[in-house]
Image (cartoon, rainbow, N blue to C red):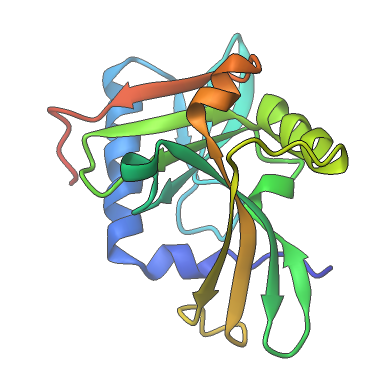
Length: 176
């Protein structure tokens, strides 16, 4: 699989607003944050958690609020047949914050917990109430059109399995 190209996120207005809201919320909470947006990395921010630097990527998802399911991007497949890992498989990514359409909160998950849960569940073919998704994407001019394949996992299933999903309020935060 080829290396992911994160330049598409940099251009999307809704993603940029979600990223700024999460950044402002982290700063307001007093978290030490290193802003890496626009550098085409697998993450938007580095932050200090338990005295160690961790990586966090922000995603904008229109599905999470209505469904109460957390997305897991497994693979992207280009129309030319190329394949590359989705964010769910990037070992250098520690946390993902998913902001829904209302932009009033972000669901934050530790990928060091989420990734092994998803992969072991897939290997054992245990996917209670999971929904596969296949999202076409044509917004990245550096790649041919591609489709993202993954799973939407019920947040209740994650919590029951010991995978913490935290909700971070974005109320009162203004995007610059």
